[in-house]
Image (cartoon, rainbow, N blue to C red; front, side, top):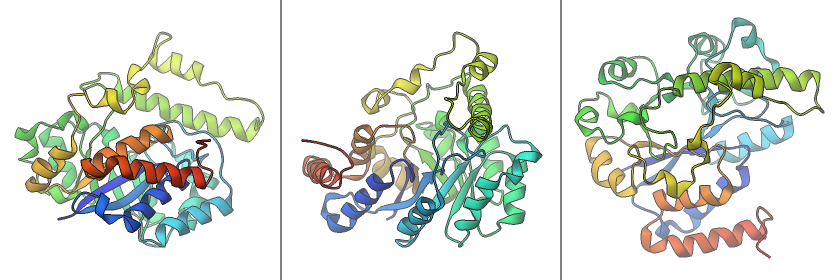
Length: 315
């Protein structure tokens, strides 16, 4: 049995994810049966192709090289969230994104895509990359999802409105290619989700263009948000923590994974959390991957390790 988890944020949570992976190797008795790390996803900012969550900041070549080596040397792919739905042809030549793709072009790393324009560009220029079809495409019925699974994708992320719709899930072909997003923060059936993704994509492009011209001036996304989502827009889902998310109708529990999804043929599970703080992310990891009776000791050991390595301060 393999229960493969895709973890968030290889850049911002670089040290945290490495320590988690180290604990998996050193304390295997803590973990549920079959747990594996399938990938760590995210981007190196400032990535204009990024989507799903606006990502600020910047990374230099030395850091990028170190992150690629740290995860790849353990057989773990980086999976780039190149899911910006607002890309134009001129954006394909972005120097930073192409530099990152070239640096990680070793046959192990992967990319998540939405834009057909970018997908075609990656297939042509970086054919070693395995491609994932993103949940941002909003394929929220059996017909759309089934058609996507017939295409040349390594993985297709199932729209989380289909989570716990076992009448539909049972009919999905190629379940081995499906990835289930287990802890989605968005409200079920959100009518603004696609437009929100578009707004985030426009913000990412504007941010990357802004810092090239004004590297020391803070970026203000308000005009884009007002234009695409309205002046009164506020997504309360973005404020939810792990315990709020557990009450969502799209929530998938660990028992569901092992008792329902895995027996049905699903083996790929994505944990959301690219913008989560480290303590929230730790609770999510413990909840999904560690045996309930071992969570307290695992939490203590991880906190001590994080403190000893200066990732958090406990004293």
